[in-house]
Length: 466
Image (cartoon, rainbow, N blue to C red; front, side, top):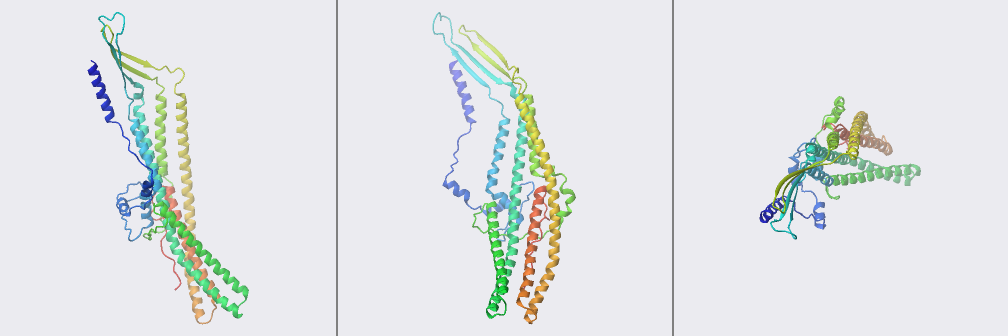
């Protein structure tokens, strides 16, 4: 009997050990840091971009030799952003909760012996008792626990996708800023060069007495303003490039090649106005994540209510006493709910569910207001940009007319400089307006939860004076 018992116990222990997890080290050392800080392998990124799976982003064909469009940069950021890699680990935590929710509590087995050791032991045998117990209460909430864990895992998936969308759009916006500054900087350099030439001419004229010192000082101030504006734009471009590199996991000093994307149709976002605010709860990933979280919490409330049922445990026993009488029996343990009827947990789950309900409604209301505000701002910026585009040709013509008049001696250099400065300032303002329109287009995509390929304005360099 002892041999059979020992063999049975060994088999049970071996079976339990076979399914146990083992420890694997994950050192946080300089080697790991160096590997984590290394630039992403663009060959691997190119392959991953062709098979990306995301509710909003679509697979793209990347060609690093040609550079990356803002839309391609968005996909690259999702694949390479370091913070997203850490955020995606939440999926593993949610998956672990799903596994745990599908597990039943282990049965409890016990074995004991009683050996006669004194007195009248004639005719007695060694007594033993074996018991197997199981908690039946867990079966009452088993299906609800699995459903709640699956809903929470789905909420985490949607929340991760929302964070990916945020990073993608931030990288796309940074790329648009860099491209816009690439258009604006040549204009600023030309304006600074023109102001320098005029300042030098005024300086020479002031030394001969042709112009007053006050006039020379005014043109020197104009050059200083143009020079300061150029330096600020160069600083802004460097900052935007470093911000872009951070979003895509590149070293700060790396030169990430960019190119303008295809020219989209104008004002497509405005044409979508009637439908952008409808169905936000079914489109925006953060709202969908909240809905799944609410669904999971509703299951948790039902679990708490069902857990009011008294805890029930059942035990099966097999025993032999010292007089060699063998018995089989069972026992039932019932917890009497006299004081604790799970009131605290039920109240907590009800309050949590109500909080999620209010949070969803508040965020939905804010999303609708945000869409309306962005559309209003976008219309105003597009109107200003159209007015700016209409003004540019006349300013350019005026500057060229002064240039021809100067060559014929019919105009002076200050008049030409003022005309050129007016044109270049308006050209830079037009670039800024297109960049602002692009920002609002990206913000509209985020707020509406819909990809709008017509959000970004045309990427075309403003004309420069010959």
